[in-house]
Image 1: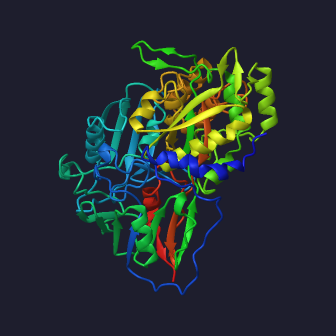
Image 2 (image 1 turned 180 degrees about the vertical axis):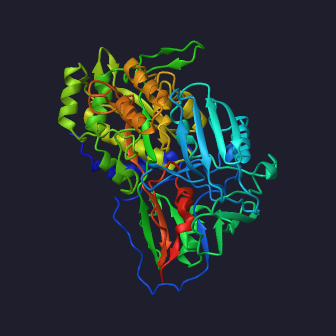
Image 3 (image 1 turned 30 degrees about the horizontal axis):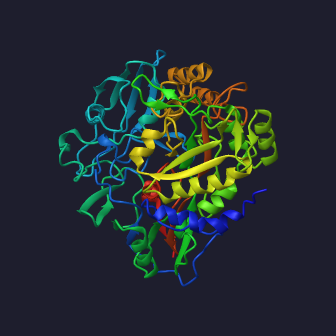
Length: 538
């Protein structure tokens, strides 16, 4: 029988082949918690130097998507999220939803100024939503029919259909000033009501920010914060030389030792998993290939889900940094605990495949009616973590008699082939609409061609709800309602979820990063979502 620890002996040769396709070589060793060597804490100071991600080349315009997952910095929104991703008030003191579910009325605070000293009013909210709706960007406002100001501090949104996640969207879209907004310049010269203001942007190098003197909330104790745009190796070298106070690191570097710094690990909903096409191979209306003859068999999908060892995969592919994932929305308020199950049930998974008629061939690969259990799984060439996951998964499923080929491809090609060859996806949003995108038969990310009318009905009911708390119950039922659903060991399993990747940062001793909320998809920038609460505790 194939042994899992054989992966550590073979992975070097496996990854060598990835170099030719543009993948960085090298797997990290199994993870162990790493803390820096202790030294005398640095004295309190008034400025910070940090490196937490790539330069946002599109700029800082929330109307085109900046800060949509909660790290706006320069703007604030009508609502916000607490540490547990529950909705709380921000610019709005409250809101009401009409019984029809078509009208949302928000009442604004009266003490809010933009960073240029001008007041924020309902007219700015109206302008922001109209601009975002017409921008054609990632901000989806197709459900919004109109927005109007009843008075200077009351805004009414009218939807063209009930859409309960609209209230969540109002916690994601930052407000811009109508009189200071210019589509061509605002992205580089943002004015907002958030805790910070941008004072300098050296393209390709850094931005310098300072506290917004007119901010209505808790002010930052730091007078100047510089965010450097460095590649990870350069950033880590600068940290080791004492030039940085915070530096983002991916799992490959998390075992490094940095004098005077500690490793901060933050839990996330930044998940990784492969879509599993649930229909036989064929073509769509345009003639494009869809479906997969192996994966359309539920026994194969279930055997992989219950038979793999997610923790082993995390240890070998991600340096042990992450937690096993069993659904699309683990740990979020609308997560359904019934979708979690025990994995690494190798004997049960093999028995399931035997009973389904998948018999082992002479080479150990299962065959059914002349069809080999042989599948290509794709991962993007510019993301070592996803490719490492594919490699580790390929080794893990060998014990099930499934031959998986991990292939590195350009991201555009991965997405193009996802309808018939599994692709490694990264999700993790603060909006339950993500479940609609992935599991509804009309969802934009339903690359598995999954269609369950009961699931569709639960999702439609959740979207039509006029009560956010009630909608959460229906979002939970759409995952598994006790009889059917996409997730859980009795579910339809159109996805093979593997991991929620922890986000890791080296942080200078004495610097406290406050109460970090559950991070969304996208390692790096989310850590500054509460930047105004960072303190120096010398």
